[in-house]
Image 1 (cartoon, one colour):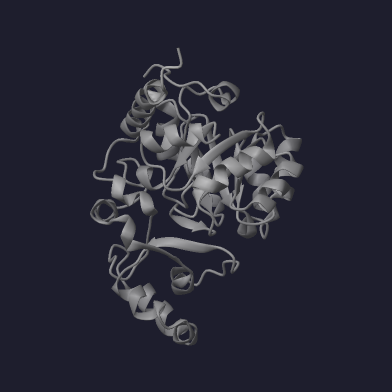
Image 2: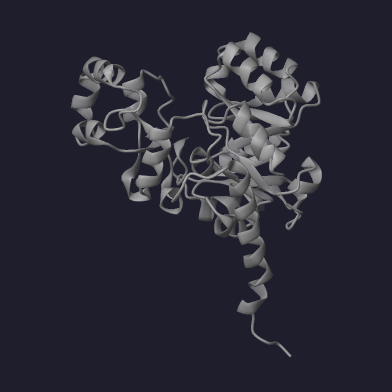
Length: 325
């Protein structure tokens, strides 16, 4: 599809469309990231907690397409050798989030690899700017997976004001179509990062049952908690909670945090014993944008439909202005 929207991000990163794949842990594998890039967006592999063999396979599956890689910062910093290994793979960008990304940013810059730092608060944005991150991602609490408490509507323009007009900024959290992209551009972003919408794509690394469950679920079904971290035995820093579709298993514990903490072993055993596609127990990680996800589509179609809708909306923006003549 021809380019319909040009931003500082599309110019500086040499892509046709200001649409970026969120690096969802293992869901955004090499195949999905490559397909988003082929469609004119920018694909990012979701390396998550850091598994060398999985990362190598993801880059191989990308088949030479220009893709980046995203990591969970606090986890990767425990594996310094893996940091070097990732950078040796020469990704098109390195994306960090959830922790002190400065060591990774510094190492990437030494190799002239573009850097992306996702932030959830202004103090994090200040740290990212001081570290010299090429792109900041302002992540609102609406997004699926881990994050913090600020909403995108206020966070994004505040990050823009702090960073200045020349800093590249992407918006993330609750964006799943052209309306979200157009709104993000108007609020100061240079592009939009989408996760939940691409999770419900043919190429996403997940089962058909999981994708069908996404289509059936709604934004009201999600809640930001740490329950599923506890259930999976993940030692996340306490300031980050995860937005997940809640289910009968989680509802049993959420209203009694003390009992939940005291029953960790019981919860983990029940979670591990469940079938991976039994989403009455297992975590289905998704954001509030589920209301806008009505079908499973090819990733390329998602990119194209998002950009076309945003371009149509932006073209009509003048209709809201009064005739000043």
